[in-house]
Image 1: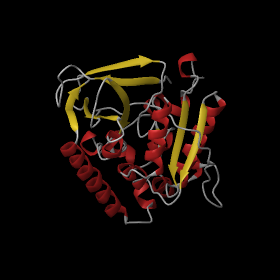
Image 2 (image 1 turned 60 degrees about the horizontal axis):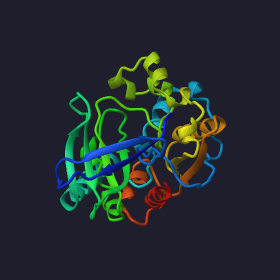
Image 3 (image 1 turned 135 degrees about the vertical axis):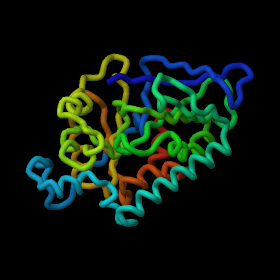
Image 4 (image 1 turned 90 degrees about the horizontal axis):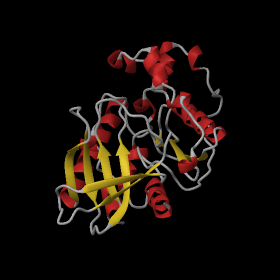
Length: 287
């Protein structure tokens, strides 16, 4: 795991066109959702009567339920919460594109989906901080076309946003309601489409590749955020991954967001007053 600081420097005369992006080793990495964060230490519980593990002993139906986030939202039904999430994030992204300076569909690799959308601050000058957002979706849905919804409160404070599109799921250190051990996924409906082997699951499980922070990342704080209404398995994975990072020497804070589910924990990043939005702005100011 390596930490990076990414800042953008405007190319002379550039507007809604090409800009030069520069990265330097040794700063703070900010990625999906959020990368590093301020020191908010809130323990994560998984609910009364729930054990911290034991997924191997679950019946197949119970395990599938644990890894189906839409079944755990108290706001809407299973299909409705997904449709509402897609609609909200797509509409928010369109509003952001209409109101911000952008460079859209910037290629960073050879894959069809390997493109970036860059949203610049309202009054860019010199260098400025950047938040890199890598979307979720179980490697099957969502894209950068639904990843710009959180832009307005950030660009208004001088922060650029880079929304990353991809063909193959990347590994990263941004920790918002994530799955860090992929093996349970092999035994759920999710893998019907992915056809992920045990070897691939092992190779791409962040839980299995935790190294002590190097000198460049020694000051990097990691935030592990999870929603109150995530499933017990999602909450367990967040807690155990945070604990494993801490045991390896990383500075880790756990944030349990009350009243949130797997979808609005992300959707609300479009709001200036949302605690996670404020955490992002706070940690950027400390970088």
